[in-house]
Image 1 (cartoon, one colour):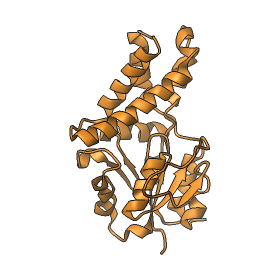
Image 2 (spheres, one colour):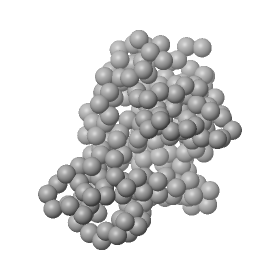
Image 3 (cartoon, one colour):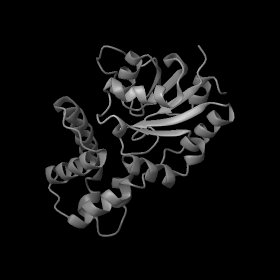
Length: 228
């Protein structure tokens, strides 16, 4: 079946979740943070994701900005850093995350081929709008879908329903792309064609489903979708 719609996870897939910590580490006077920014950023991301899964399991939803702040607070404390100014700076930078270098041209190629493009993310609408604007990719996206519309985080099946509500059509006409293996696996189980962007060469998660495709970055997406 022909792919008509390409849907992307946002954080870690289109936007570099390490960009905020990396940029802060390069600023003057951040020596203590610069010495361990990579570990702090990894813990921040780990806790951010864990808190979405746990809240979905608990049935106690909050917005993604809250779990982003809570994940950062955990990470800073875990690594022995108490610096309110640094915390504020990291949160500010998270609203302006850089897109991966291949993202603009990849999305432009999809649009030039007549594909419909969208984001489906745990991010709140305000966070996503800020990231899209900062990256300058709003003109190559047809929709920015947030799980806030259903009040539960991915990989709850209702979150993937948002794609059909926005575009209609068979699920097998959707190529769903994520850097989170668990997200791509769940989307496979839902019925999408999936691509896992495995930037760190990790093993596949042991889950009921597997990603249909695996790649190291997003440059091959137009070819995979039949747009090149």
